[in-house]
Image (tube, rainbow over all chains, first blue to last red; front, top):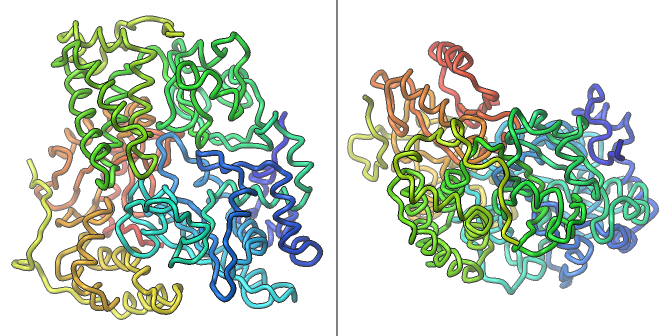
Length: 450
Length: 184
């Protein structure tokens, strides 16, 4: 059994309310930070903890916070990114729904360290009902004096507002999120200036994922060094993984970083193994990260055991590795068609491209069209090279990472499953049936191109 | 077969719109969250209120009313409303069924649920039933991948769908008032 820092009390009765949360040690970090520590000390603990952004990019949180500009007389903001839209990811929803006060507590402590008197939670519009839960938690916290003026007599004022989006994946990108929070279209901004210098309303702003901010609570309570003892190397602490796809036990699990990939997939504590058939491929961190075939999921190209850490999952680069990303884990069994799935991914990115940069706006549309015809028995072998060419021209040529996120699934699918694409081009009548691989698996185990 | 969804870009033939007293009070409460001079930030939440009070879609009249509440140009509202997928720029049925069809749901059979709904309601995706009761839409990932396949109707998530569950849901919805995202 691994240690649980975020979900330890998730099943305790009444944990959703302030009373139940307090009874299980809630708001201790606010007391500790405001009464005994001071902002600098909180920042120091976060730095020591080695906490990395849990939204996908894995940027060190302490470092991000230390970039916050502090011009006198100008307000600073903390914005929590709850626009969880990465396919496969539903960990933040789980956390906000079950323990809303943990996010509120983390926000007060973090804002204290950052010197922000106002913070916002930008939550995706589809989670409207979750925003009501958060609003209720904020009301409770305000009534109990955890929010408002002069919290705990420390002289620190803070208030939190929930802002509901309206359905746009791109608003999970931090500058697009800020644009959206200002009441505009979610078009990402060109960086620099970074939000830490010019963010919300042109003021210094830190944007962090829900899970990142929640992790500040145990870090302040137990100390950064204690947190850093969990995990391996630069992957410290625990991570929420939302598991789905063809597995026996879908759900949200908190793991200590460093659990082996095989154990995570097969242990009854977590995924419980693949449902029914053989494992074909895995996407470990949301649809944007490269898909990897089963044997590369279990072992790296150097035949080392693959671990659930930032470093181990990306071992071998994109040739043989992938990324931990947001922790949106989903597995494919051998009845699934990779071409169909890649077409599905491309449709997603075409739909969600904001349309600012030509490579992404045009490229995602072309990739979807080409993948559609391959999947529906109208493709040709030359399409595979054409796809490769298009994705290569998108990657790195756009303002925000959505372009990369659209290119990587296509590139990795072709890299590891090229023969499946070729089969689609050469067997048009067979693949017209959407269930073609369910009846006759193309192959039991995928071959890796190492 | 039902009517296809198409954006309505004219005020012709659409009913006038004005906020209810409660709606207006809610708007003011939302505007107060943001710093002075930054009331435009309230645009997205206020569009949700307008949509809920306008039978689930945003007519030009409704968007113009939002512009008036915030004191901004009409175009500032149109460009935002047309960007986000949750704002309907066309009339929708009483119940908007939004089925997630992104890869994690696809793996777990969302295509079957879509096909089942199409057959059951006798409409294609993107259409409204003749009686104006249901509109069927497919949407991208709703963050419910562990309980796939699923659909959203108003603020509610209906998860782990099977044909039987869909049957029960449709029957249940027939007698219910409209579900809005903003429902409490």
